[in-house]
Amino acid sequence: MQNLVFEEPYKFVPAHRGKIWTAIFKRFLRPYLKRTHGVVADECRGIERLRQSLDVGHGIILAANHCRPSDPMAMGLVTIEAKMLLYSMASWHVFKQDWLTTFIARRLGAFSIYREGMDRAALSYAIKALEEASRPVAIYPEGCISRTNDHLGELMPGIAFIARAAARKRARQSPAGKVVIHPVALKYQFLGDVNDALTPVLEEIETRLSWQPQRHLTLVARIAKVGRALLSLKEIEHFGIPQPGSVYGRIDRLIQHLLEPLEFEWQVIEPSVDPVIRAKDLRQVILPDMVSGIISEAERDRRWRQLADIYLAQQLSLYRPGYVQPDSSAERLLETVERFEEDLTDVTRTHGPLKLVIDIGEPIEVSPDRVRGGGNDPLMSELQLRMQSMINKLADELSDARSTAPRRMRSVPVGV
Image 1 (tube, rainbow, N blue to C red):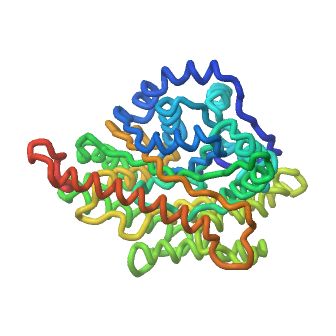
Image 2 (cartoon, rainbow, N blue to C red):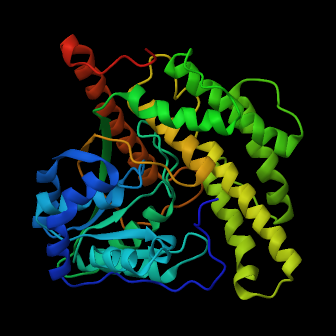
Image 3 (tube, rainbow, N blue to C red):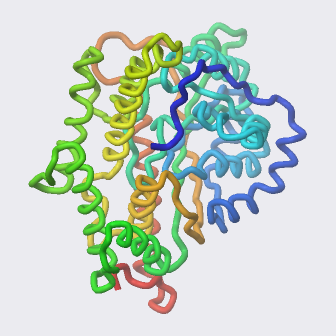
């Protein structure tokens, strides 16, 4: 389990408001992305849409998909192209790594959000930035890194709360101001040979499984076989034996096996259908007594085991049905094997070269009115639809470009 949850009291970490360090770090951003994340080329689209919102003085949220750890740093490319500064909401664990990470993150405009509880300080900080229209605020509403660039996860509702609260404050100004959300799609293109990139990783995993290297299989078949083996190991751990049925049916069964007893024990009322939200809700009720230190050592150990099961359920849910097929893109295969490695070792090696396209969509004006009654929030529904449509468009564009490229320029076919 990655070091994402901490058994200590949360303390809000504000962004550094100065401009000098930001200007210095911007000079090193592209070299950093290349060296650390393999991003060798980038393209920012829709900058003129963002500039228009900036020029009229709107409070601006940039709502982006979160498919790779590089996303928050990559959003810095937008600040370079749009000639602006940016605040970015970042999980508290980012500031718990080491002093250098905290130093750089704060000076690039990041402030903390505590995902395991109600963080009024972070909400107030974001709302005030939007009320003053001092800087746009970048938010990643999926709530975790998906490693599924073509699929947008369920969006957390906090972004709508922040946007409407700020919109109400701006509506009371004289003259009245507005808050808008710009949906942002980040799309990574793998420019290398996917077989060369993934074969060493698969061979290491096969060795850990005590297998001989499965070089006789196509790349897709090899990935599928490793995936089934890793799932079977978890089923043996939790059920005693591998389970029957389709892979994704088995994944769903294991998720329910992990989460339903905990939701019953901790009295989670009307659990969400989304495992990421369910995991967040469970952590919010399990952690407080651990942080306060009022439980026994045995109970503390029991809760850490529960947190590990919750983390596993969340990770399992990020393997999307049908994401890997014989004709899947190199990017989908890359993401899947990276998740295998991450789930086994908590880290994954850098795979490049990558090209990143950042597309900034048309603004969605936020009404200051509260949503009445039950049902879906229309703001969240529109944002989800817009973001997924933009991601689909970029994926289709990349697929079309590959299909029409001269044969000599195409990547090595997947599975050959």
